Amino acid sequence: MIKILYFAWVRERIGEASESLETEAKTVAELIAELRKKETRYDMAFSDLSALHVAVDQNLTDFDHPLADAKEVAFFPPMTGG
Amino acid sequence: MKISVQTEHFDIGAETNAFIKLQNGVGAVVTFSGIVRELDDSPMTFMEIEHYPGMTEKAIRGIVNNAVKRWSLGDACVIHRYGRLYVREPIMMVATSAPHRLDAFEAAEFLMDYLKSRAPFWKKEVTQKHASWVAAKDRDEDALRRW
Image (cartoon, rainbow over all chains, first blue to last red; front, side, top):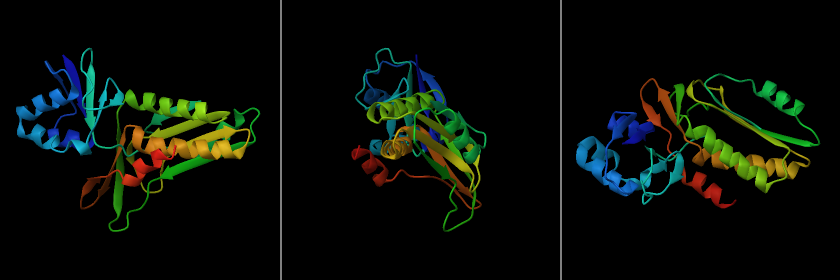
């Protein structure tokens, strides 16, 4: 079971802040492909990956990052702190 | 080293003075504060800042640790708010101290560049007519390359 978090407009488009999912996905990219097949709102949210960042277990990483042992995956737009 | 992610308003002057009181052997303190800017076109009602609890503190700590490795610093402080903020309220501040000013200045700029695009905060501007997420700028990403 993996926990998935969404922030900012990704959260708004998907309509949820977090969810738990049983998945066979081996990488972040595979997880995204699985989510996109679920429903249109996911497909829309993940349609342009260049506009998205991912963190696995609270560390920024790439879409090819493996999910073995991962507990938490977060998707969000580029950060705007400061 | 002080790192605070908070909803509460803070007093930039009081935080600066408190930071200075903790210092030993430094001759330079640089502070930067970001405040909620008024929008050009329509009056902003408020700014809403979202963050990633758990990751935010960790990400900021990592950024500050990198600054400490790279410059000869006495100390560093980062305060960043989230939640609902109004025009002219402080959003965040950084303070750096060093024996000499160059290290303090450069480290403060480094901290700001990284906090801007590597700390998980997202700003939304809300006016009476609409609400829109602030888009990251290409120049924010470019700014990281100089380090």
